[in-house]
Image (cartoon, rainbow, N blue to C red):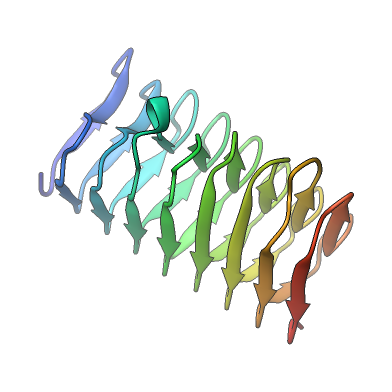
Length: 195
């Protein structure tokens, strides 16, 4: 799917079903329930704008343990009513890299829940009303070379039951109203070379 404008949809603007290897490029999705909903698929989502959606900008969901390997690059994800990007489910291995802007979302910029293991690298994540990056208990991730700044809660938060193996390396974390990095009851984690 290339260069399509989608707006005012009561469901997801784009829905990618199980086992799909699609490419979504150059689209603009606004005022939908969710910008794009990925269900246990492997899409390449690049160079799009997801803004003003009523729930999440991008939602990747590994359903019933089926693997989800979305690659999310070069997008603008902003002003969504919930999270910018939400990754959910065991066997969710979404890669979020080189996005131009993940900002001004009502909750969290990038959020992982229910056992998701994500990679977040080379993004600009700022001005979200919750955390910049939030890894909820039982999730972990590789957070590298991001600019994470000016989020209203912690710029980066992770920890909780069954949370371990998170790597936070070479990020520029600055100008938050609360914590730069907030870690609670976490297992083993690597945190080094951050500014």
